[in-house]
Image (cartoon, rainbow, N blue to C red; front, top):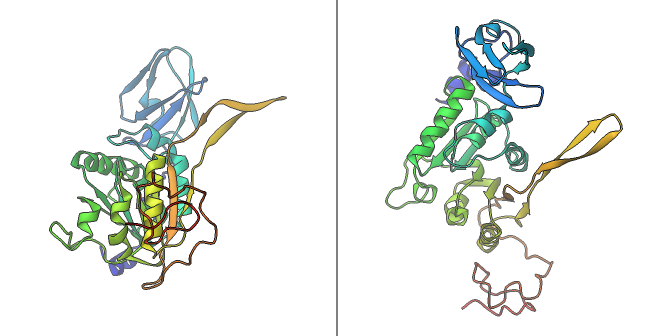
Length: 328
């Protein structure tokens, strides 16, 4: 769909139409989450005449259909359940998955850290189960463009179904492609002629993001952001040093986030016994103008950081005073 078509069609230009957020009476075919008094959640796809069976008796779908959101429904056994439409974060952690999903805490960090904005041209690899794709699509809206590459056909199929199930329709800004990103953006055999030629933001959730740095640099606009989501310190070190050696990016910033809930009841206010700890590392950097090289860092590396045991990427001349010498 062209930008001119998107502007001419008021439905496409309305972000709410493709947000997955619904209001008003609950309708057949909608998904709702019911929560029992102990906080246990169950997901229901509303269908007339159907029942959802719990350990405390059945719940009639017809008791929910046509009624407002945020009601309490009682099972045959007398247990009360709160019924609400699922939020995006609730849907993604409970949806069918092939690859591990990007959890809401990391998706939120990516949207802000990579500065995803309405109308942005975003490149994503890989699509996984579609959790991050949903967050990116909501941020860019129907006037942006999200091009997602996924190497595995089964993962791509699951991601497409999950996105469609949450939104209730196809998203006009999403282009899901099957293939390897480094190959697709290259100029050799297997190059994708439909790949975007100019992008504002890049989000990489893949095993070896450092393999794509050169091809991404050719298409990322000056000032554009690259954001990498990796699981291990080994991956984090490799992509960080690759961006430094490339020279066309700002100094990479690495971080992780952890979430700890709190129990609040009267005078009993304490941290929760459980928390969402490490799920992955986020690394962000910005593209410099063509031909511009990043200024040399003034902060010296720790002694031995680039010593004889270090085998990753390094500048032609290693920093002095760290025992690294020069690259062979």
